[in-house]
Image (cartoon, rainbow, N blue to C red; front, side, top):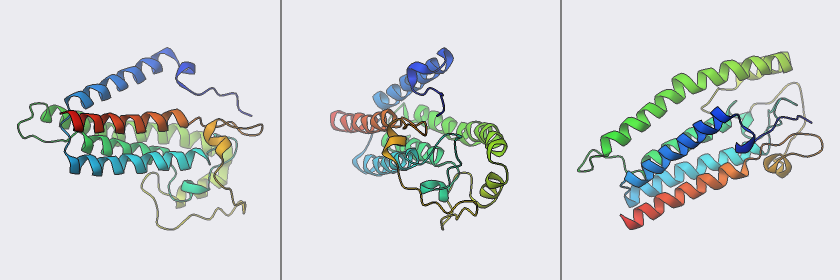
Length: 209
């Protein structure tokens, strides 16, 4: 089993600072947001679906121990990133993005515009280059065929059938919660809880503005 450590406390100090800065930014966005009922409901739906995709992926990813080609990985190579993108869109909508009379509207627009641009032109290319190269070394032709047939982010309509394995892998709660004796897990539960908590924070902001 992989010894790779996951979770906030096991990350390098610089990564911890980045996460703390991110949460501070999200907190500021929530504080200055002006959500409407409609935008909150639509945004919460986006964020919730994004969280569900990450939960689904968390029960299939085995982190370099075998190529994940089941569950959401049959449709997209990066379901975690797809889920993250949907959560980002959901937060943008729940913030009540508007130029109107809210002087913070343009600031919020700027924050989310930067986040989306960075996601597509900074974050995704860097992750694709680094992780794609590693997976190609680990899984060779299996990954080459997978990358050729499955989109990087936005999903294909039909599930991909991996020619190298006929195994029907089901969602694993052990992988989602932290792994088992054979595979290291993903410990996705804290991220799920944080996402749902932030949706709740936007709801509180809606009810108290």
